[in-house]
Length: 91
Image (tube, rainbow, N blue to C red):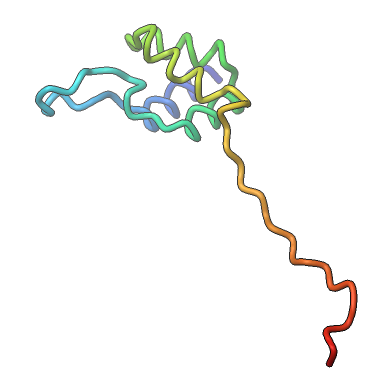
């Protein structure tokens, strides 16, 4: 199970490109919040954090990933209900 987890995260997250000049290296730099939420839901927050730390993630990168998990920062889509027709429209 752990090997599977590591392989999946390694494929999805990857490492930052060393060929890009001026860009800081880091495992978590290129991860979007939906990806962070998906893997934390699939495995666990401590397991994901441990994996990131083993790959050299900084405290700032870990904190940025934690901000993705806060409920008050999440935006969800809500469907709008059509207005109720409470009477006739004179037709």
